[in-house]
Image 1 (tube, rainbow, N blue to C red):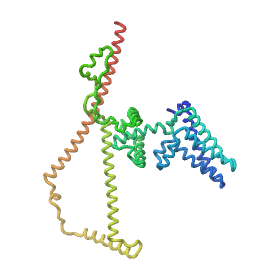
Image 2: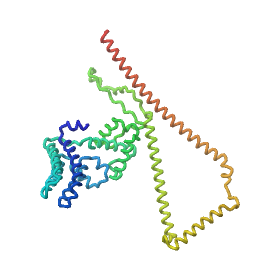
Image 3: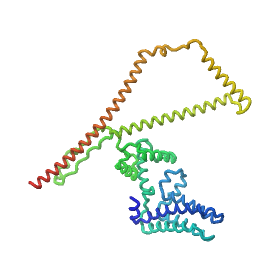
Image 4: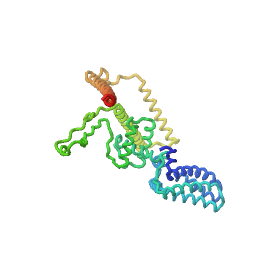
Length: 403
């Protein structure tokens, strides 16, 4: 739904949301402008400034998913998901700003008027019995659809349940998912509108164990064909139903190019995570070794005479080792395998590794060719079906015209 369609919907809750966005701008600007009064009016200006942040979290649901807020704050914001509750909070904010007239008139009256308009819109929506609808432009239904797709992504690709994750982990994975989505780094299947609609249905009905189409999806079993009205009812009760005619092949399907790319992305992501874990473990190990070394041989304090002597000894030891390494000496003992080579065993090992790499490359090439052939076959089947429909239509026209 576009902005024009939302404004033409005559739903006062949407009008209240857009008025709330105007309240955010006014409260933020006028709250800062009146904060320099050095008078009791500064209390109303501070409340006006804080109100702008509360309103933006109420009106833009996306911020609760992105910003690092506490659980108590999230629960407080989620209380205002009905027309009457929003009318109440806007009315209270407007009343507080009207009370600033007790001291003297300021520009905060503009905030009071706009807040009163927003409260009126929400109150009218509640009185007329209109359902509260989040504006898609402000991150309402559109974000809900993305959250459904995000939950499906975690379930299929990461084998994670979004309800079992912590708030911090969900925010981190949400940012990573949005970054990959915006850069187009996800597999093409995730951008399919059918995938999004299916995930929305599963998210709405609460079916967490729904399985999406994967690389080797098993075809669905053919159901019993519908009974023909011209047939006798007694004939339907005898014998098993005939299988429905279908063009789908039973058994595992040939993986598509998108499936192969998706698998390659998973492998690359696993390798990156493994390397990151190794780097982290090495860093922790070096830190632990350094701490143990300092416990065994504590260093002198920096800048002291003892520390200068230690540095001098370390430098002298390094120079001595370098000098001894440059002096001619006897040959070091080298293993026969290093000097003459590993012989047949090493040659066979290298040959096997080379053949393994070659076989893997050929297998990948065959998979890609097989996937492309399957895609071509699907396209040819679609063209044949279209031609058959065209020929049937022409035959029907010929029968109608020539009998």
